[in-house]
Length: 291
Ligand SMILES: [Zn+2]
Image (spheres, protein in one colour):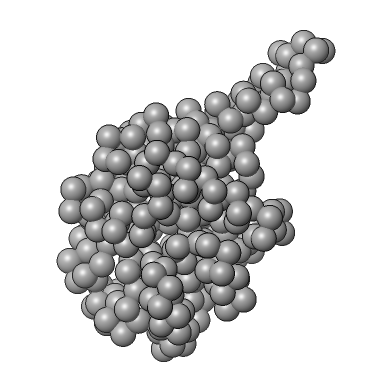
């Protein structure tokens, strides 16, 4: 099966009522664990690398590994540049073989977001690359977020949520294949229980005309996930929860380990931890057995 257009993956998910999990995979252990989980669960999957993580893992270094993993996989896989903000990152990702781009123009004013997103779509379409745009703004609290740089004071600002009517116009004017919408989730670690605006999500799904993407899902309960999927979310980005869980497990294991532990043994255990959490997420998102 291997390589598949993200637009195709998300159309199927939207139609059949599940969400394709999109995992940030910043090293080989994560890539292997996630692909193993997808094959075990018979789930389609999206591997992504975020521009904000380039400082940990250069794009040029990990892209060939991601491309190879995509081609070898026995299940449908897309690879996506996550939160591409610079033109340079977008162009590099496409030239290195990524077949999907999440262009994040959400920090710009509406017209500028439309202009920049349209520019990316125009190039991407020529290369059969799917594009996800963002309208509204999913915040990233600085006191808990893994990549915090934003202001905590705007977390509850409803003016940052996606406007359903504007969503339709944004999709039509830019030509994007999927829309990241803001309706109450935040990136990174939740500082308090999230309140999802599910009515708004309903409206966005009905008006947008393309599959909806949810970012910032790590602090949600399984029930929250099910509700958003029932209301049309077809792709869910997941990183923070997994990143924390695997470190916790590793910490416990290393504290109990004897002195003869080798790095490669530890590495295989870490891959297993990523596999286990990714598989759990696939079952929650109902993407298991959809490959
Ligand atoms: Zn995100």
